[in-house]
Length: 394
Image (cartoon, rainbow, N blue to C red; front, top):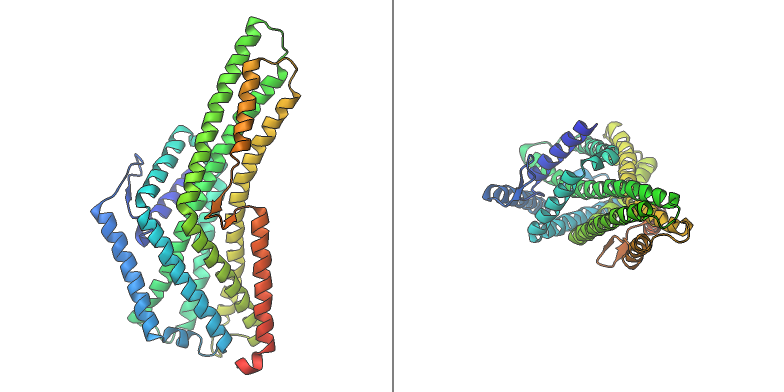
């Protein structure tokens, strides 16, 4: 499984270089990062080509007409808005990536050092990483099949280039999301290791019987040293999480908007297939089947992304719960060990682990439920509007 994780990460790195999201070079053997002329030219050329094709594609304004000629006006408005927001969000995400290139290089170096010191973190996040990799890979297949089926009579080199530009946007989004996913999963793996060490320290401290002897004092000092070292590791890890959250906050806002609109558009497309049969009279059955498959894969992908963050926050809460067990220790515990526990707990209380973006929202189950509730409400409103105005929209 570890070798599979390494292959997934290598492929993700190659995909990142291919899409220009990773605009610097990484030595996969040493982990060293550097800005090179080749990496800059490849990334810049890729992005200019993608947005140049999209600009040309938009100015001609014929692809939307071809793809949705049988759709009513509401379909056109919905998908034009979604497409427009996706282009803007990807553009802003790439602007953030270019403006913070050095920041992302330092982040990668920090994660590489964390992995070198604690290679065991992979075994606690490998299933999540592999699941995310295959889900992302499979999710793009239905979209490609739908597009090819709908454009089968208009395919040409020019149209193929435009389709490539559109799918490049999805690829760029997937790369950015996957990078954040892997980073959060690795932090969670490190938290699991820290919790295991803390569990051992707490268990040994609970078993201590205060007697004032030399062996007792020596063991308390040894446990205090271990706890202080663990607290320092946790502080460094939380600082890394905060740096990660700060670096990605602009991109995360863009990704949340894109995910929200994609889910809204996909839900409306599912309704349209059930109501109208298909968006075109001559479309094969493959189109609605792929749309259904894409809908459920997309939901699963969102579930993976959400719970990856939830599990990280849960790991932090487990650490807080372990520290709360210090109230069960035998009275008269060594003062230095007691102080080490108190300082650790006080530091966590003063600096709670929070993942946020520009103060707009904070990641967590409550915010995710609010987003889901809003998505459901807007989907129903959109469908209700379609039903009430179907005659005038036709």
